[in-house]
Image 1 (cartoon, rainbow, N blue to C red):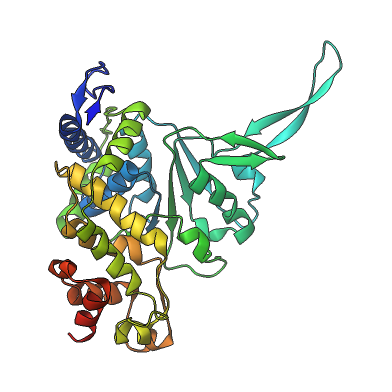
Image 2 (cartoon, rainbow, N blue to C red; image 1 turned 30 degrees about the vertical axis):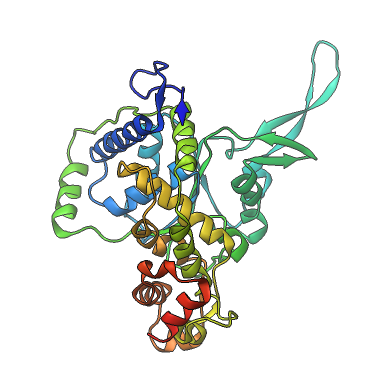
Amino acid sequence: MQDDTTSVDGGVATPGNDGEAIAQLQAAHARIRAELGRVIVGQDEVLDQLLIALFAGGHVILEGVPGLAKTLMISTLSRCLGLSFNRIQFTPDLMPSDITGTEVIQEDRSTGAREFKFIPGPVFANVILADEINRTPPKTQAALLESMQERHVTVSGERRDLPLPFFVLATQNPIEQEGTYPLPEAQQDRFMFKVYVGYPTYDEEYEIAERTTAEIVAEVSEVLSAADIQRFQRLVRRIPAAPDVIRHALDLVRATRPAEAQCPEFVRKMLTWGAGPRSVQSLILGGKALAAINGRFHVAAEDIRTLAHPVLRHRIVTNFSAAAEGYTPDRVIDELLANFDPTNTSLDGDERINKVLSA
């Protein structure tokens, strides 16, 4: 397949094949990580998952306690990518029009004529930080649904397209639950990944303290443009996924559904609700982006398994039995991965599930 798009280096138009484009994406990823490392200490897995979601065209929920540099991480990433960035602080009194924008009446002083003029809201940017998204009521949370899925908003009956690429990163605080509104399942499903931001190690926290209390402030350079990112997003979709890899992703997702006749017994006992079809799409698209970042033009079953936790943890609902026995969504996913052997994809669907049930 031929690709006559723009090269990353210098923005010069150079024809080349997809293999060369994969090498460019891999090099760009390394440069982005190097630039982020000038500001962000540690959090390697989190940064990798953010970039995988970006190149796959998805959105991310970041969950972590205050002070773990979630906002700094996102704003620094937007500067590395040369993208416009807006931060929306979600509060109980935030209205949908505060996000999407609104129409106001303006008067032409020369003629006295009045007309409606649209004032864009903060959602009109490439990178949106929805800070503490669970602090605003569902009506306002839902204002993001259309923009996340369709890449446009509708105000006063008129569709208005958002700038591309469009990347939403929402943060949640897992500690403070008073005065919060849990995200509806329909909206959580729009996020490709849910990423946990953990505490730094001792050495990382020492380096953070040393850096942030010094006079010198690190600057980052722009690595990619919006056009480069869109080109890489198209490239990721062209990466082939073998039928066996797709079946492995499908098996994992279908095994999370308690209503399925061939659901593992521990899942039926621990889950109220399983993951939907969008989970399979996220696993495969994320696997393609991960393969590209690693310089491969094919998806492996291991790519799917690597992304199972961030893709599935916010799409499965545990019940009271799980809480009583200490089962978190991540522990359910761990057991699923342990039971599913990706080498069994030569069997048909029923045979693969039956092999898991008999394990």
